[in-house]
Image (spheres, rainbow, N blue to C red):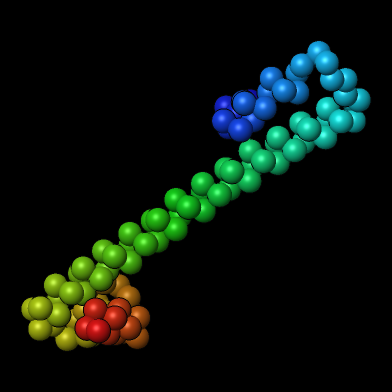
Length: 98
C-alpha cells in the first residue's frame, strides 16, 4: 500500500483508540475514503507536474522566439525553428512585445 499522507497518519491514532467501536460498514467506508483521498492527491500531483511541464515548454519557446526576434528572423523562420504553427509563433512573439 502507498505511504499515507500526513493528515491520514495523524488521524490514525484517533480512529484506532479502544474507546471507539466501529461497525464493519464504518470501517469499510473509512478505508474507501482513505483510498479516494490518496487517489485524489495522486491525480492532483500528476496534474500539477503536467502543468509545470507545459509552462516550462511555453517559457522555452518564448525564449527561443525572443532570441530569434533579436536576430531579425522572419516569423516564417521562427515558426520553422520552434515547430509551431505560424499563428501560434506570432501570438507568442506579440506577447513578448507588449
